[in-house]
Amino acid sequence: QVQLAESGGASVQPGGSLRLSCAAADFSLDYYSIAWFRQVPWKQREGLACISSSGDNTNYTDSAKGRFTISRAKSTVDLQMNSLKPEDTATYYCALDRSRWGRTCTFYADDYDYWGQGTQVTVSS
Image (cartoon, rainbow, N blue to C red):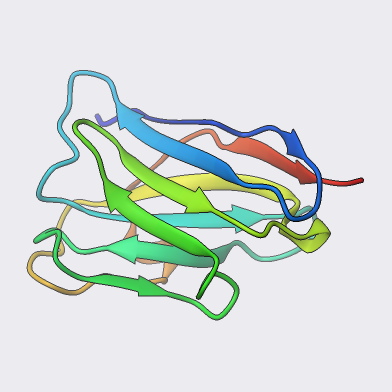
C-alpha cells in the first residue's frame, strides 16, 4: 500500500505563490506517473498537471497552464503555483498511477491507484 501525503497548502493573497509537495513514506515516487488534482465541494475532482513515469513529459490542463509547474524533486513531486487567484481555492491532491509507463500521463482520476489526503489552498484578500 502506498501512502501519499501532500504538504504546502496555506492561505495566500491573490497573486501569491505556493509550492505543494507530494511524498510517500518508505516508497519512491521515481518512475511512476504522478498527477495533481484539486476539488471544491460539490464539484468533480479537476486534473491540473501530471508528470510521466519517464519524468521527461509533463501535461497541464487549461486551469494550470502558464501558472503551475509540476516537477520531480529528490523524493517528492512538487507543484509550483504562481499568480494564484481566488478561484484556485480548493483541496489539492496528488495521485499515483502504478501501471502507466513511458512518456504518457492522464487526467482521468480513475487511472490513479493511490491518493493523498489533500492539502487546503485558500486564495483570498
